[in-house]
Length: 502
Image 1: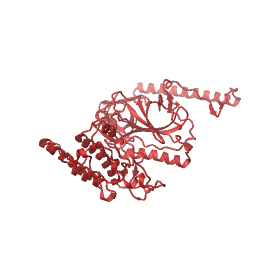
Image 2 (image 1 turned 30 degrees about the horizontal axis):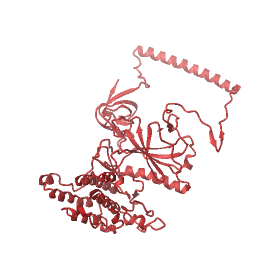
Image 3 (image 1 turned 180 degrees about the vertical axis):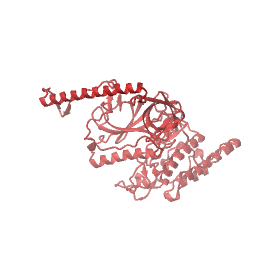
Image 4 (image 1 turned 90 degrees about the vertical axis):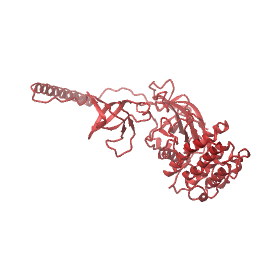
């Protein structure tokens, strides 16, 4: 396998790759530190998901194109379903590793609280906690369905917790599917959680299923199997590819056991049309379990005060923003050959070994096999007479322009001193301002497009352009760095929100 060489490197001048989290057939997952971010920022650590199409030896042009398109579709799906209970995409890029291997990458938020599968193994979830998490999952998944995205791989391992373990987020949209897509449905998902309409057990040798249309009921099936795991702590292996019909023996005597079986049985029926048709319907049935459990504990007052919401409510963690980064446009390695030396804006490689990131690298000879090809040396030649003549004329022209400008400047100062001409302000003088309130940062001098970030009150701004009472600004310092940790640093702001400084 051709694994990427990224450990202990700096990516794109800002992400210090620290460790490998996992590796799949075509992608590698790393934890990285975002160097410009404050240590107190919720996104000081991020996840780098790198697409490595060269990990397998059987790569062909069609397969690579499919993998790149799927990787880009994952980014599109994440942006389309951006929600407090869905993992957020923070950025993207294309680079070469230390071995000169091209790869695309997504920057995702790092959720250090582990996944719900691990929490189940540790036997740390109470029924109340489980329903608290399931409501958040229902809120995020319902939002995805409303925006035309089917996840297709809901399972406890893809439900991740924030560091404080108060917020759960749905991760891994790598096999997500748009509702309007008319391409054949391929087998995906984990067998124990996958519904019949895209279960590997029903795909045969071709990998294509006979179901022609996926609906939200496919995700509801997987969510119900996941709920069984979270509530009982047991694997749904016994109910693989069939409805859930009973609970473990130690739970059958609870007041809510029969009702829970009814809910899970309906949600896991083989026929998608017989299941709950929306996540909200599933949550409303599942929320009844909380009322029954409270009644069993005779907590009447608590039952009244904590009656479940009819619509699943999101839980917002610190650092969430609804503003998505710029949409990526990834290319195949064949297309990228036109740009063999991927560098950043300063001409430095996009991946450098830590400790050498501040050094300007020399151009290394390219190697083919055991041979190296060095670039030809540049031998200085005497300048031809025509070139010397041109330089002489150019120098005379520059001197003439300088004298003419000096005469104009002297004349202007004389006339201005006599009060004949008004003062001309220096157009090259830098202007600065201060935000007098919280305001959106726009990509253009109008409100037609979605904002790219926010400018918090008392932020220090550098004015770089203006148009129709809109100012193009660089944000020098945010008034509230924590509230604007994920905001862009450049954009347009309405002039009424800026107090100009002399």
